[in-house]
Length: 100
Image (cartoon, rainbow, N blue to C red; front, side, top):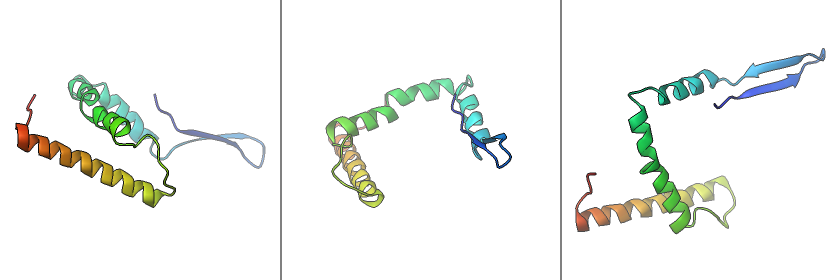
């Protein structure tokens, strides 16, 4: 369960607990993820979405970088995933799409 809570002390030395502004949305997403109709769809993440990021880390150098700064890292990520998508498109043209 993902919970964003900030605890700090106020001027009169009382603990103040505040919830993150998106906490209700996070809780709703967690609830929907465990819904019976969504479970089979969510289970496919392991073989599709998570696999893309694993390949990017393992084969395309996303795990480590020598670049500094948000702009440069964003550009590297965009170019890397564009290259992965081009490889997928080339494989589809060569072999035909795999519809399993």
